[in-house]
Length: 84
Image 1 (cartoon, rainbow, N blue to C red):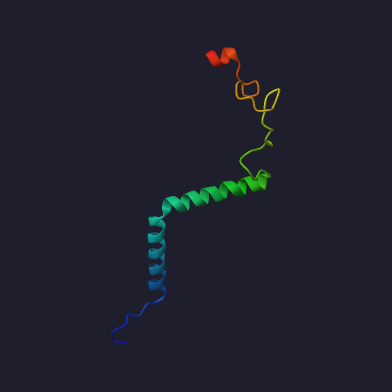
Image 2: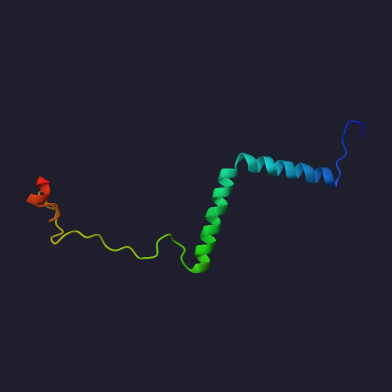
């Protein structure tokens, strides 16, 4: 056993701790962001609101006449709003 170093339990714990601390320090922004996002998702899931929106989306308003009119775009534009 001349060329090999013996590691005890303490040496292994120190080595593992140092490896984990180096891995965390190199990617801490990503780890913190992922943990915060997971915590926010878990909180919303427990409250029953999984998505960021609470209301259902409404259908788009297409004007009085929904056909495509290139001059006024379905009533959205008129002579006064075009002049402005």
